[in-house]
Structure formats: structure tokens, C-alpha cells
Length: 281
Image 1 (cartoon, rainbow, N blue to C red):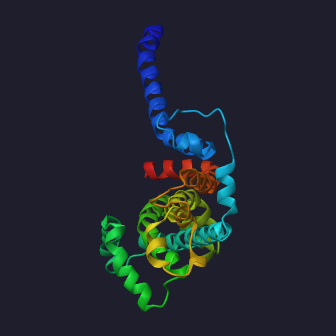
Image 2: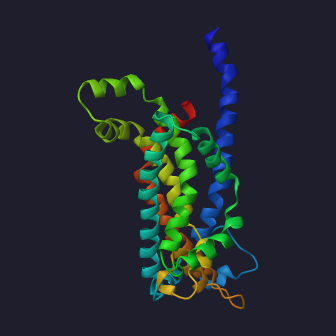
Image 3: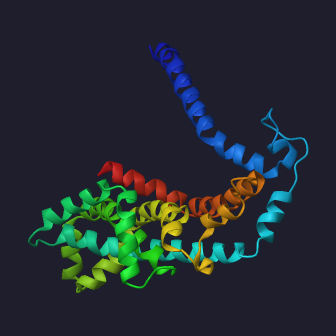
């Protein structure tokens, strides 16, 4: 009977693998086209008959990108904003998730519902109120106007996800730590924090990607001081409605993608275990 079962399952497995490859190809094709366009000469980019390959790759588009005067400053600003958001949101979310999971206090359920409601509100609907808020606080044209909103938008998802990780840690482990003389602070940072670290990594990936690729806030809050702009704003340098430099746009987009890939590769193992833990919960 065992050989028969193998023969029956094999076509389904082959179909599943073929479907996965097809989906992966569809998802990866825009990235491939972006990188290909970055290496194409100007004549091929503007051609009426585009081909999925190039026989004359060139680095001219990348030279124009790195030759742009403020590109390095934009890159450093993006790293500063994304890094600050990732670290701050992870620490705040860890403390908040521990509080709503381990402690009993009034309006705890209401607070959790508010976290869900906050995720339902579109970012575009809050951009204008946030603009006036930053203007009244005197934070326009500063990196703080980008950091604070992204931390606020990252926290609801991070708290809900980390809540499952904190809840999965047995209370008996906490009681045993107290019996051994550990304080609550020591338990949180020496025992609980390492156990929920995979969840922190998973939430950090989403925070990093959303902050790194942000264009709406950067365009709305950085009005006159271009020295405070981030990397997505560099795309506007190469986009002229009358004569757009598509090669420069694609090269700048490729450069923007590299840090995201590096960050993903560095945290890949932790990310997989973190997502698996969230699904299990």
C-alpha cells in the first residue's frame, strides 16, 4: 500500500511546487525588471519594444545616482529614522505587551480594542491632522516629524504580536525566578526578553520596511529643508514630468532595496521562528 500512496501524492506535490514557483516568479518579476532597467542604457529604456534582457549593460544610471549631491545625506537620514523607529518601537512594544499580558488593571480590554482600531485607520486619513500637530509642535522639517508618527503606527501591530509571545511564557517560570531571588526587572530583561526576542525581530522587520519606504510623511512634513529629507525623496530628483530619467529612478530604487535585503538576511532565522511562534499562538 505504501508505494500506491506515494504515487497518489506525488502529482499533488508537483502541482503545489509548480504553483509556488509560479507565484514566486510573479512576485520577483517587478524586482527583476527594476534591476534590469537600472543597468540598461537610455536607448533601451525608452524603446517602444522592451525586451526582458539587455546585451549592453551599463553603470551610467548608478553613476548619476551616486553623483547626486545630497544622495549620501538622504541615505544616512533614512538609516537614522528607520533605526530609531525599529529600536524605540521594539522596546516600547515589549514593555506594553508585558503590561497588558501580565498585569490586571482597569480598561485593559478597552486599551487592546483601541490598538485594533488604530490599525484600521488609513495612514492617509491621519496625514493632515499629523501635519498640523507637527506644525504646532514646531517639528516640521526635522527628522523627529518622521520618527514619531512611524513609532506610533508601528506600536499597535507590534504590541498585539508580542502579546502572544509574552502570554506563551509560563507563569510558573516567572514564579520560579521570584523564588530564586530575581526581581521583576531582572526577570523581564534576563529571562522574558530573550524568550520573546524572535517576536521582536518579526515586528522589527515590518517596522523597518514601512519606515524605510515611506514617501507620504517625508513629502508632507519635510517642506523646505532638503537636508532633512530621506532616501525616497531622492527619487524626485530623477523624475521630471517633461523628461523623466527612468534609469536614475530604477537605479535609486535598486540602491534603496539593498539595505532591506541585508536587514532581512541578517534576521531571517529569527524572523521565521518569530512568525512560527505567532502562528502557533
